[in-house]
Image 1 (cartoon, rainbow, N blue to C red):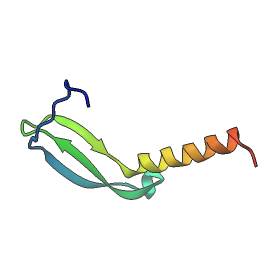
Image 2: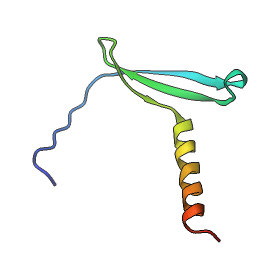
Image 3: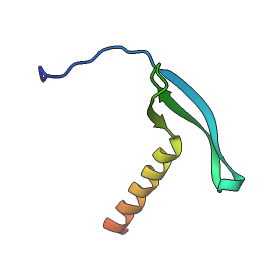
Length: 67
């Protein structure tokens, strides 16, 4: 284990909202955003990005290793 790694517990605000729908041609899904206590945006989790990455990996594998 590296000695220069530090970790600590901090408080953040997690906001969950629904994104997508027929107007966007995207599935409805819960998206989580994370903010610090001063209102600064920190990060976002969108499960659609996981689906896209998974599908991209499958397409890439099928191109690299055709059956």
